[in-house]
Length: 377
Image 1 (cartoon, rainbow, N blue to C red):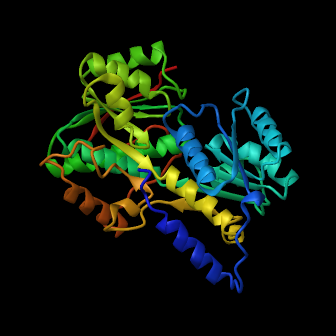
Image 2 (image 1 turned 90 degrees about the vertical axis):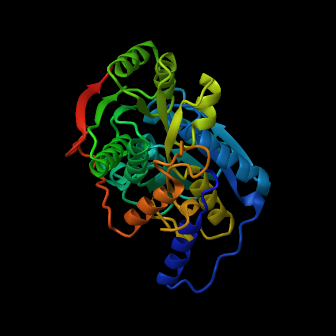
């Protein structure tokens, strides 16, 4: 959903400036004064998910505005290697560091206090990750964004059951808060739709315990489809390869995550494998943040952790979480775009409340039968 507009962030910025009594806007930064570096987490820029979308947003913004840009990939999956890449980027003259993923909390907590002239932007880095867990108290050069994944998951689960699928599966990457919220929301949405339709529905629920597919995960997905799953939510970076490989063997279906993954899934597996994708506005929120910096308005967002979700009850493309409103969703008479708009409005207006609990990796439901598998590896 690269087309998701940055309305919410713009309004938030404007309100924040007013509320703080800002009297004079800062002059827009010169292109020469802004140099953007993006550091990957444990994935890379070809993961067709979180890292890739962030990379593409940063690269496109830099090219459109004549800014210096480079991406860095840490040597290993640990804070020390992430800090090393941050320091290398700063040493090479970059002063805006964009980092996707909760795993950067420790690196931000270590590096930000040492480089006060550098702007640190964390995507999917929560207050818990950064302040409570990593212990960073001074956010004077830090801005983070989190997303309401539970709503995206709810909408994907609700749509899937409404479309006629009653035997579901879930394969999360690792049981980290964002993935747990996606899965918990997915179960809630499927549960609600099953109640409305008066149908029996079930779900097999597992975590790969890694963010990539391999032979072991594929074997587990083979078993999930063999045990009746019609569609599996591939929720965790490259883990989709194992889900889709298993689905393709039986002409099963899959659900994407973070971005509209239908073009990727369908092209790779040669048929319409994708039911929908549970998405968050990574591209739009990254672009909006960089624009805020370039416009000289960093002071209106710095020190904040924005929580982006639904921005509109009527404009589906204005929302930072949701499912694809175009060909990326398997629309039918059973579940139309108007049906989707109605459930979004009900969530936005508080008629439907989606629980965002991420304290327990195992979800609960009142109607949906859950077979909890836990970690595959």
